[in-house]
Length: 505
Image 1 (tube, rainbow, N blue to C red):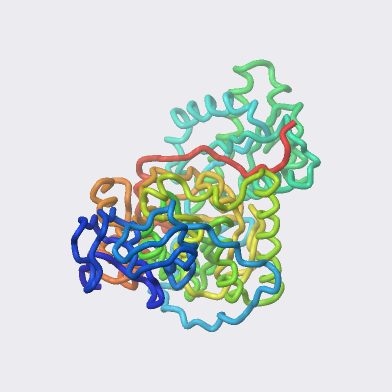
Image 2 (image 1 turned 90 degrees about the vertical axis):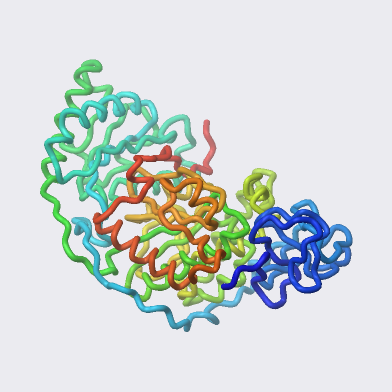
């Protein structure tokens, strides 16, 4: 890609995006002179656009011009009227499932065999699960002591992590929507990185009982501690230390072994996006996704509001009516969820997204979908559900970074790839996160937080294919424990925020 002042994605587009700041009066392309200063990543009109005419990017109508727009004018979010969402009725499934995918560079990785079966672990972690927020203070203090006194003795264990959350009591536990947070917490308990070891801490009077969280076989004194049954703080801490040491002894025996890519589950997510995310970072992730799927791995992409306006495109990649109907069902559920809250999809994007050139959710969605590549969609999951097949999977989750991440962890991801344009220090305690940025300025500014710079594509230095192959190799190396991602190296861990649409009483 040669260096230009702006980039046009589709031949039918009537706008382009400024690669760098463009000065007023500067010729952008032949016959188009900037009528305003065009900020980096923002749109410029390539032709005169009349009031109510379509504004087109990615070959898709982003919205309708509120007033006349002249050629060379800066187009910002206040100049578009949002179109109606695509209908969820009569979607077409299975028309775009024959794509030839790029060959995976390798088809093996080094992981921990999962004693529960299914996807392998990328890390070896003692997870301490909790039933209610009330126990978090004691658990956190115990973990501080464990890391000082126990963890150094067990060199093969990477970390000890508390699954603290705001659920468990003061909630409508029998609400239909309560199945979502309960499912997330139940599935986290069996995360591949926990090596089959169950450790649960409850208070004793909460609504989310141990019986709701655990399988019957796991409910015993070897796995569960109830704080109200202990004789004060010191007894609580000593009990937690004793149980943890027994679990650490077992985990310390885990060893990495060569596994097929079919035992690797990767999550794709984006946040702090800009108008370049759909040009560089997300297409790079999409290329790596296609390579992973071709090699037998399973990849999740998510974020309902950032797929909703492209649902008609995504639906055509669903491999069956069953998969497609589940996609439509999840979208309808979320439409109703937003409507009940008296908002709609226009509540997304964020102010930072808009500063980065994204005018509305349609534009954001078109760029977001790019991280899914071209592979057929083999399954659709409700929030926190576990996959039952390999391949590309759409996991319906909120778009919020800190809620999407735990949902994908509950589905069992061992690693997440996170694309960003504006930048975020986001990270997960349970699995490594690889950061990919959309522009070189971001990498230059945050060189010690961004793992891979897709902005070099804009700079004309390389291609989506080449950076996609780099990302594929990075995924395999990080998953195999041969290196740490930068977020992991700095131990950047966001709070564990689970999705709870049910009422709080």
